[in-house]
Figure 1 (cartoon, rainbow, N blue to C red):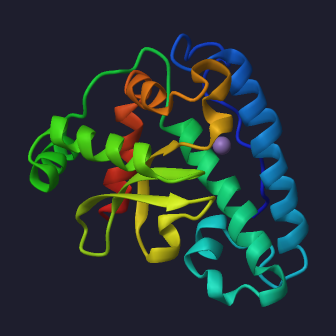
Figure 2: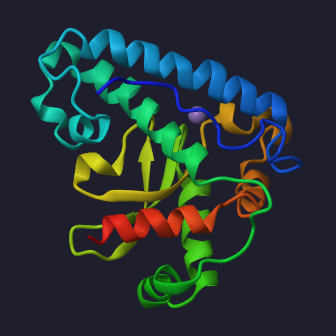
Length: 203
Ligand code: MN
């Protein structure tokens, strides 16, 4: 398996006004690319080169110690952003349907309660990091947050939705107002894609 920067499945400007074109260019073309490049440099020095990024991050302790931090941080950055682009899209802002909607109601009580939990996780992540909706080992939905580029994959959980709360994700448009970015983010969540990821995670 080779490691590649995924193309966006939509235009850079198509998430406006919620996420601006310049942020998308910098974030995808520069930040994500840099994580990928540094990950490749690190993983090439290990026998794990060529294994899927998910497999590597799920077994991070198998990575030789000399490269482990670099793989954790940059491999995490590579994988986390690949998911982030995928679960966003233009003309979104709808609500989940079908089995995912049922599972959200089961785990959180309602979509609004889920939203509150997810927003709260994103807002209270101190410093850089991510908030997540994951399928845990018991095949239940869970909201969680991680620091830096850490991923729930390393805790045996399968991520199906994430929000990047590093300042580079929102600062150009929202400055210090992280909560405004979080609220706007619901307008770009592609719930169809999240449902597909949920279905795969439940297999
Ligand atoms: Mn980012």
